[in-house]
Length: 591
Ligand SMILES: *[C@@H]1O[C@H](CO)[C@@H](O)[C@H](O)[C@H]1NC(C)=O
Ligand SMILES: *[C@@H]1O[C@H](CO)[C@@H](O)[C@H](O)[C@H]1NC(C)=O
Ligand SMILES: *[C@@H]1O[C@H](CO)[C@@H](O)[C@H](O)[C@H]1NC(C)=O
Image (cartoon, rainbow, N blue to C red; front, side, top):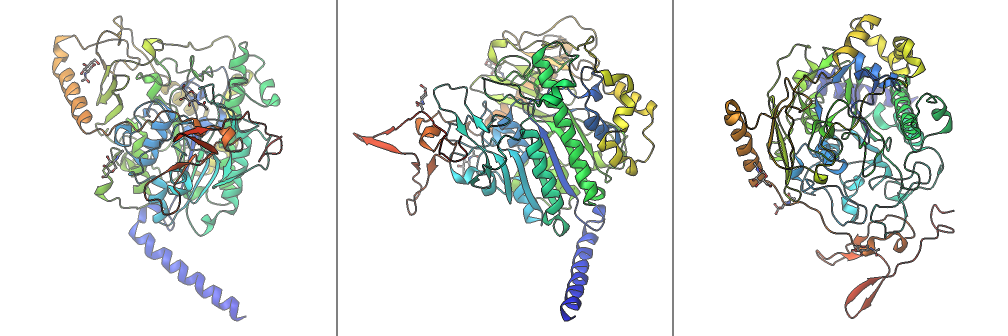
């Protein structure tokens, strides 16, 4: 009896505690909002059907967008490491050393440890912080890894990608052996090997939502999917058989597999929203879905992703690399059911979500991202905030790309210009059989069923069709392109979103051009050196029980000295790593 009374009292006390908090941040009602970020990996700009594509449907993602807001002009750095770094730090890659390419598993570097990351900030504000899935911000030293950088919990992989079933990765640098890369916090996780990765990560996210301390603590969850990134070269595209059968109408077998991968990812979004409904947390959640960068249509890690009608792709300075598919939903957004056309940088999420959670950020963080919560959560007609977005400034490859208001400047390009043009077209013949009842498909999706209860106006057929038409990018009809190999490029994105009309050499634009150039020089002066380090042989998985492991460790009492953690031989003071072929039998998670 006494125990009961006591716990009732505690409950009351806790309630009062919450009340005190809520008065200081009225916006969020009586609880801090849950933040759920679902990240697709290498998904193309046009590979969501809310933009109007009919080749394969994404009814759950579309429902999230139509009930919430389409992030019409969401910008991200053009590759995984800088993009995830910008999201978590709120800074441009030139301020965290991630401006050049990505971290390959065998390289001993990381996102600058100087940066304070979003999970750390949210944890300090009382959140439970969780990463499920991909990290890709460095793991050579234990202190680079997610649970040392603000996440209470990590279930997933440290490197750039893995096989969808076996969880092993072979780097494109072919002389490294294949290594297992899957963990729960710092421990290797072998259970459930063989389960398709998209489902596995979703299962874990569902479990977390069901059991998490969020009933007491608000939830910060980043679900970094593998899909639809390629796996290893021997079998780059992987989707469950039953998913492939839905896309028999797609003639290109690779594109068919890609459709299966995206479709499963779409279902994951449905399952997450349903799980939040079941645990009665939906009414207090902010759910964001987006792709980390443009799809790689061709070349390294090509997955057939389509960025139509934008030019370029992943790892290029063009809109196809940096303008990404995305949507947000939350009952905290006043103006739901429309396009959010304000240019928004992934680095804006940190200050924007912090505002939503009533977290005050110290000036000392020196963010490049800006707080756009008033625009995002306010009414649909809020005026645009002029936005500068530095897409990249990579002096190794001599590429810079900067957006300032309506203007975009590009100087130099990647891959010798091979991927500078429009690389895909929209498939018109291979139409998803569900397209004829598109509206029904969207409204019957688990996401729509859950979110309809919160609608301010009913999601009618007319509204769906209007939004889908509005989300289509119209290129305009221009003649003069720009060859970034030989000239500087300047575009007016307000009329030329497809970057087809170079204004750099037109007299009336000379002031704009020099302003953009000056700003690049200014940003360059404040850039830190790229953090890249060359591959090291002692990272090889054969030296770490066939796993990708932290391959540099700091022995106790050694000051700032790091040693390779592998088995190595010292031959006349040179470290020679002992390299073996990896035989998984009898090893952790082997067989
Ligand atoms: C990190 O901070 C140190 C000390 O202030 C500074 O010397 C270094 O350049 C910074 N590194 C990066 C990548 O920001
Ligand atoms: C544009 O690229 C050229 C060649 O790399 C370089 O000399 C010039 O400084 C660059 N301009 C800016 C503004 O970065
Ligand atoms: C693979 O080749 C690179 C480049 O030659 C070299 O630096 C690295 O040590 C090699 N790795 C292994 C495991 O042999």
